[in-house]
Image 1 (cartoon, rainbow, N blue to C red):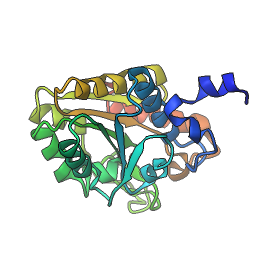
Image 2: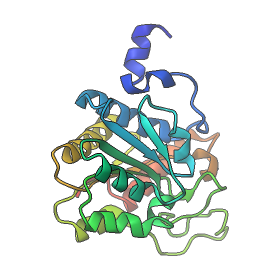
Image 3: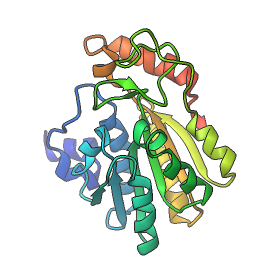
Image 4: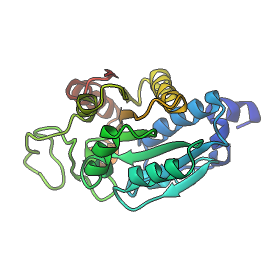
Length: 241
């Protein structure tokens, strides 16, 4: 890979991470991070951004960017970044969290940050399972989906987080993207960060992402993206809220 290829393939703020990442083959996290990196580049915010990551698959992004980065306890990324923002009002604070960290153990922090209209940006990766710990049922697991803790199919309860945030905060920036629409995802994330940059308060992007390992579709790429784009996107509409 020559310098021009690297320039096109990797955000400037992630250039040091042109080394191999540690995510599973086919994982959607690198696609989300790529969109985030290019958004930061386009806004020229590399030196102002503080990047917080949760325990879970998201923690593998702790050294992905050449940014000031913080790894937190599980579910505590959002309040950590809220605190960082209050101590450093000029910083751009991004909390990067999985659906478990945001909607289960971290649900109280997530919802109350939205209610208080904290001026941070939250990006939540929704792959419908607890991925790092073996594919257990998560707050986003689709009804009937077979996972490690529900081999006969998950129950009917699942969380629509963007809709929930919109209900408690009418002025927040709220959107749901998907890894397979990369240009649209980058635009959403850029707009979310701009919302924070303008001092308008809470901004939130949920991203539908694939997990071939726990979906058991590692050798079936078509099945992976059929589930992502047809099943998940049907339950979780990709749009602005």
